[in-house]
Length: 480
Ligand code: F0G
Image (tube, rainbow, N blue to C red; front, side, top):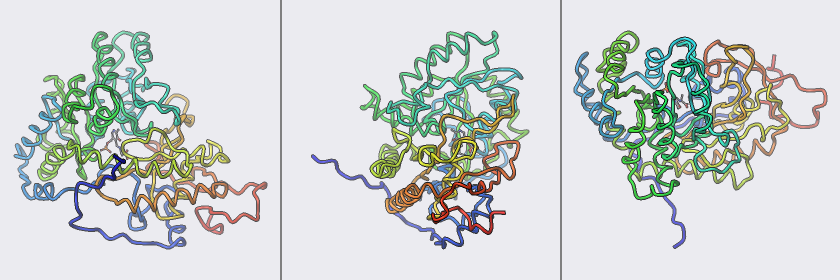
């Protein structure tokens, strides 16, 4: 039988109109935003692919659950429902809710990292590393080499390299490895999954050496789907079964529920060690709120509990990842360089290859996000040197091997037609790549600079072809 099309396993009950803008309006808006898509107003955005975080559409069941919020300060019913669901699907014993993922990262880093400790991870994530460094830790990357090559077709490019892991632990001063943070569907690598076999191996290596493993379970459900799809011997298992096994191989997790768990706000820390749980419950009251709400309303916890149940349904994950695949394949067919294999939560454009005339020091990915926005009103996110920040020792810019622009697909929000429009805009901008200019900082905050930095285009080079109509992201008279 020929391959049959898939369609979303839902129909649309309520719509949110989008505002269309003119090119002139967008040129003005990106100038006002300092060429940083994080600083755009969402009313000026047509298709918002900045992030899949907190941008999901909730189901009618989740909205109904919101009406069942028990807003008691202590001991909310919704907390106990969420606790039961987290235990059932993730398998950890103790739940500490937090306002979002970084709240959980803050608790874990504060409790488990001593100044000077090494913290291992399969590629950094921005907020995770920031909390590790604020706690005095030093991040050590133990991801496999394939992850750094956007063209490597390996199915599990999020895997830890076992020999890098062993070396990192065995050469560290005794007792100075705080833990391994094992991220699922590695975000900065392009949404690349980790295999179950790798998690088993890594967990063994760490257990023998007395190093704890904490999952960043933010996209573990979608990672479990890739395991079912790609890993020999896993096709017959349900996503829930695979997820439970992944978690059972670790000591706990941090989770940003704004992704897999289909809510607009929320997160949690979940652990098996009763002492650590007790310490976390004590710390959460300082930073987030009482341990039975952790910065969330009762209704938010109810929506999260229902969202987790919906998130592990095969039909849901297949359509979600299928939509990302649809956009990615369109771009591949058009010859656009993207990270391959296509990731779970977005399509990652290889900005360094799309804009080879822009030096890494002039932030090609940042420039590409601005040019895409001006072309069509599509908002994407820089995931390259601006996101990587500066080396804490030398204060020099870090230039990761991947200089990417992420087109991140919110869950259950956009249609196939939106994906078509997105692909057309990328193809248009790439066809006129030479007209895009590099960027330089105008202002640069100390922490997580990508969120709030401001930029301006580099001055035009003398060698530039004056006859070319430039699609500089702004009108030339507004540069200064
Ligand atoms: N871990 C991963 C892998 C993430 O992708 C994120 C957030 C977090 C932790 C932090 O969670 O935002 O709830 O505090 N990622 C968003 C993104 C911001 O756009 O990729 P948070």
